Length: 198
Image 1: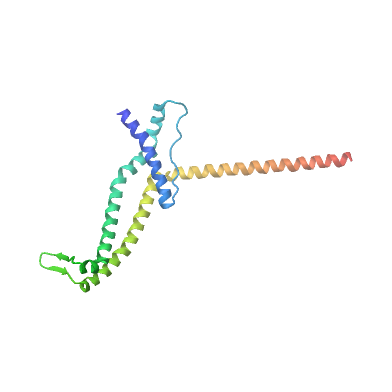
Image 2: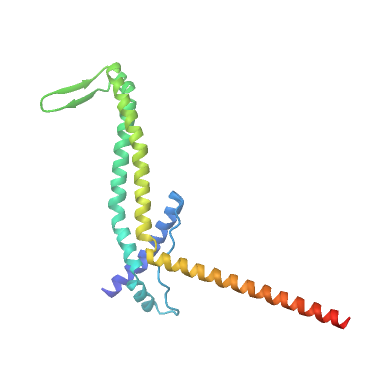
């Protein structure tokens, strides 16, 4: 079991990193790596232990486990809407070449076998086209939000990273101001000494 979880842990991260690259390429969303630092040294078991204890690893697994059903649902929805739009938009031409649209119910049957009868269905096809455009956009935004939630750092990690960044930039600013103050003091001191000697 330990060996299996180690293999899963080691294989899950590269897949999650690949998904981050896909999100960057597809949606221009940068998802930072939320992982804890690994211990130094060559011992793979200590590294796997840290990776297995990292919550980000389990979030990666949750993302990857749900990725197939979610993408399958997105694929089925997209193919259904775009396929319906394509069939309905080309229905008058299709009927002209002998294809017949037949819709059956328990009590009635609706048959379209003339191009003029098929013409109103092109409006439904255009409507499906518009719905398809919005559906793909909504699915893309939802998928990107899902990836950001599970593959990115938690809110606490993001705040800590922001605080560290601000602290580092503040320290750089203080160091730059201190170096400038020393330079000014040195210039004033050297200039005053030269004037006194002159």
